[in-house]
Amino acid sequence: MDQSTRAGDAEIGARARKIRHRRGLSLDVVAGQVGITKGYLSMLETGRRSFTRRGLVEDLADVLGCSPGDLTGTPALSPDRRTLRAASAIPGLTEALHDTTLDDVPDDVPARPVVQLAELAAAALAESDQMRFDTVSGPVLGELVTELHIVAATGTPAERDAALAGLVEVSFVGMHLAASLGDHVLALLAIGRGWDAARRAGRPDLLGLMSMSRGIELNRVGARRRAVSVVDGALSELADEPGPTLDDTRVTQARGMLHLTAAHLAARAGRVADADTHLDEAAGLARFTGERNHLRYHFGPANVGAWRLAVAVETDRGPEEAERFASAGVDLGVFDSAARISSVHFDLARAYAQAGGARDGEALRHIDRADRIAPLRTRQDPLTRELVADLDRRARRRVWELDSLRRRVGIA
Image 1 (cartoon, rainbow, N blue to C red):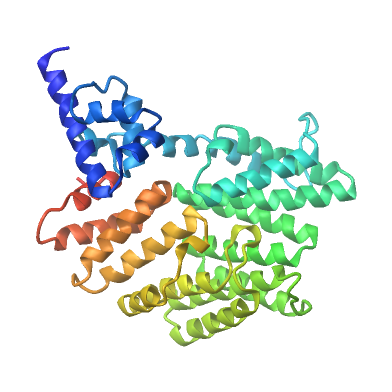
Image 2 (image 1 turned 30 degrees about the vertical axis):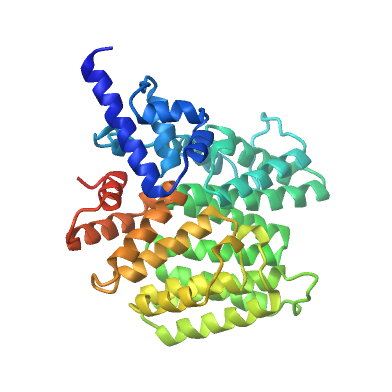
């Protein structure tokens, strides 16, 4: 090994050690998550061992919550591996949604038993909630979508109902994946299929939740009038359902999520009073249900508080609501969801950034935390780049976290 290579490895190791200390992580924790020994990591950090595998640099960056460029000192020129794995599911999902409908399915594709398909759908939904799409990467998600369509069209009544419920779940996964990668047209197509499946299944709880997500995606592509129409229509439908019981709060959870979405849409339109009314309606329903998690939507008092924060940001009341949220002592661990927790940190970052520079340190801390928890979602969000750019313009001194975020989101 020549001297320049050894010096380069020593620099990578020194940067890794510095970042590990800033993150407050021990050698044991980092080594365990990377899959190497504590001693080996120590030798890497001190330059006594070389980084001979590019994958090792990427694994270490993933665990440390930084970009490979933070370790190597060079800009990131390609997406990280997590994004590439997730993106590999997009072609298969696109083909499946365009090539199958609930009334027109291929007759030359074998479908696995519906019990197995339902288990796979539930597992995919759980992983999606943690911002992991490894088990449905490549063609797997598309195959699952196609087979559920086939069983829903050709199975017995019981098989049909199970397949439709499973299709709702994988449609949500498809929407979540596509939206996280910035493909909101595909996300809308996916959630629209879930809405169709919920309607055909005759499940008002599923229909309400699919309507909520459909409204969000319609809003993201600029169809705001239609978004309001879908959400308001679903609220009207669910109002005719029987009152909730403590044994079954699924419809009530769906109503609550629809009110939260309606609040956000109203805030985006400048109708602050309407937004607050919907938030209060959701809060009342949450007091009845307590913390619930039907279809991984996390409805309950904690989520109402998180949505109240998001609505406040849309109406330029972010700093005050962030303080109220913090003083309420909401335990984000109640969500047990990387997707939801990262979103709350993201909204806290946006809220503190509205203080005109007075709270930029807190904004930086929360956007960094959001990215460390769910980099796939955070780095693809165009608001992230704007937020980091604003923090960078206002920075009075250089700090590593800000420089790292600039590299992670691709700001030169």
